[in-house]
Image (cartoon, rainbow, N blue to C red):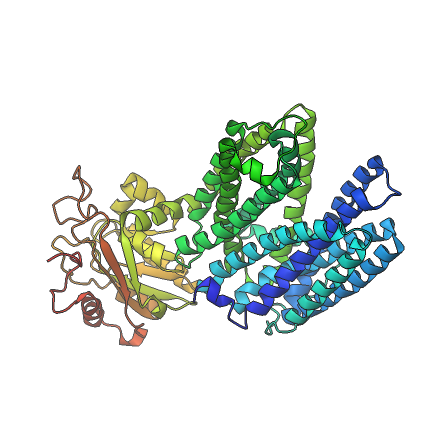
Length: 636
């Protein structure tokens, strides 16, 4: 099921609509209030307007610091669909009071209600992201996050435009805005009532209203898994970048590009559409797995196109603001438009895998509280971004120069995160291998259990067999590999980062062999997937070597299901031994081969014999009566 088809599913569509209309209403109200303060209220001076706009922004963010940890506890303790219904009912109540505040022309009341809107949003955040892994399948998680990110940014864009247009209606604009936000709140409430039940993950949890203590505890839960914690830091950094671009874009358009407010809407639309395009492209590129190897690609794009905005250096005509049509007719402006759009595209590629990884790898009973810690950090980074931008501009930088500084800072942050968690770079190398050098067809991989321990056995054709498997199979795999492969520089980095287990022949290094079996036992005890190449060496003639009994020794200690796999199409490639030693030819053959990874049915441990396993793998390699080898399937 593709992500678009998820919109036809009752388990996802009501949630998507609830999230969409919630984000829409936030921005309708915030932008409508901004226009009301700046243009509609005759009792407010310019100085008061500037002050109130900044106070409003702070009041909306403040609840994320105050209530996110409580929201995380609620989302872990209680059934999520009912909790969402209650939160949406609160939104209706807030919008009723908003209508009264507009009728009374009470600016103070409107500002205060913005705090309540922020409270409602902070309550919804943890339950929103922790619900997704419960209502979609693992292979749908990336697509579901892509839809959520796309819907959120489109809702922000619509809310911005509609909030301005509706509030600007002469004499009656605020009344139309009051009716609109109430109607949107009601639609969101009705959608929320259709969300399927999602049982609580920690019903025994005792609520703790000590904000600081519980934030420290949620932060500790997030730090328990390094990849989750640094993904959260990466998400927070994205919002640091994003709030900088979005906040500075109006003045960038007005004072440095010479465009009017409609040019600002045009560029914001390009950015939002880019986020959506990048999110869906991320799903396509990931092959419907949580592919964190795309995060470095997203980070690189954010840097390159952020820098290019500065080097484009388009300047508007002083005192003359141009319309979108006039702006678009200038050839130089196309580059700015492309830069803004591509920032959105690479932002989507960057953020979707990070959210999916946090959802997938967080412990289910603590997931909402971990996401609450993420929301607090996101809010903190957005506040810091605002302060940093004010400081940089006061120091004499123009906005284009600020964008250049942000792009260079992104390089430093990327190096920091990817150095601490080299898995991101390892997965990038794996992704590049299987998407640039080969065309991989995956067959029957659903036979691999979604949860629990199991052993994978596969024929051994080349030095990159493990990389192909790692890139195609959704679950992380602990590979048992011949120790000399760890001496190959690039492969050594990849396999060590992936937690591969080095093994030697019993006659070569008995101690290393024993340690390898102990590590395998520990991995299976922890519910992990272990892959072994039972031939014990890479084939020298394309045919299966006799299986060795190591897999039986593993099953004696851990009787778990065994899934046979077969790789076809790698024999004759640059990484195989068809032409002698592998990886020695100056002009390698076998690049861009069409290869296949085929899985057989899982075999219960009590039925496993070496003969049975070898026959199962050999059977998967057969094709129209051809010999049982791993020859390229387009040859012969």
